[in-house]
Image (cartoon, rainbow, N blue to C red; front, side, top):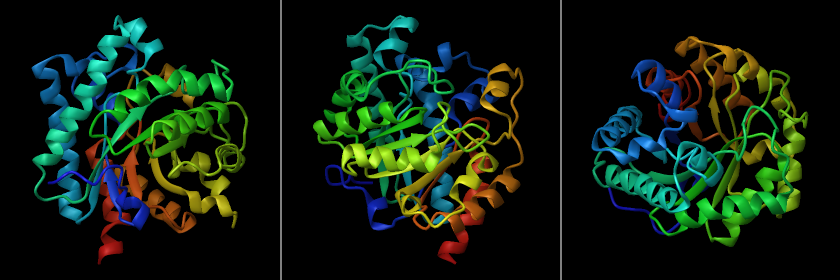
Amino acid sequence: MRALHRHQLPQSNGITLLTDSGLETTLIFHEGLELPLFASYPLLETVEGRSVLRTYFERHLAIAADHGTGFLLEAPTWRASRDWGRQIGHSPADLKQLNEAAIALLADIRRGSETVSPVVISGNIGPRGDGYQPDLAMTADEAEAFHAEQIGWFAQTEADMVSAFTISTVNEGVGIIRAAAAAGMPSVVSYTTETDGRLPDGTPLGEAFEQTDMLTAGAAAYFMVNCAHPDHFRIALESDAAWLKRVWGVRANASRLSHAELDEAENLDPGNPAELGRDYAQLKRLLPNLRVYGGCCGTDHRHVEAIADCCVSREHA
């Protein structure tokens, strides 16, 4: 599989892409691994860890091969930013090397993928603080300055884009998009919601997308929603608002539990893969440009396969 032209995004041309599922919850609850502060990027430090990550991604790529779609490889770098890295014991120099190693691993996986095309590589960015809580109130300028470091590292690699997941405030989303634009990288911001379809700081989902586009002159390639069950945000999509056309991707949770309940849960709630697939089919009817399908907390390859069965097979039938 040859690399894309620099920063070419086939999803911008309507190409359907599958992506992966709940990486961290899969590694913790199914693989029995301990991830410090829910961070998977330290696995890149060892041969064994890189093998675990490769197996995980290749398992999902096989689903894309079966359904005739492209694939979006998200780097295991959601926690690989300065503040989280410091708590885990990594210096900025360490983090730079590990972010680069993450993209190198995905690039190697892409080169070896003969049955899936196109394959897009994304540098994955997480919130500076707790994604479930707007606990670190930043201005957009502060968010831009903070996230510019990790985005700058990605800009020097084979990453085609950057994606920020589980973002809980508009200011942080705006800062990330501005930092990516300054680095010449296409960007995607994915907001999370509580059970009422609002961001953790209370902003209605649609208003968050509208404000973000207004404050960035529409610079994001597109938007996504993640880390919430479809039941939590479906009501926010039941309108004919223009912003719905900007939401191209969903990575939902398997569980209907709230963020607070998930934080306290000692066991994994995997929900029902087939039911989640049907939920995505409903979302597809509400989101006219939905074309990136994956999962978040509690999901694994079974959920992605069920989603593909409900949303992609019909599309290509």
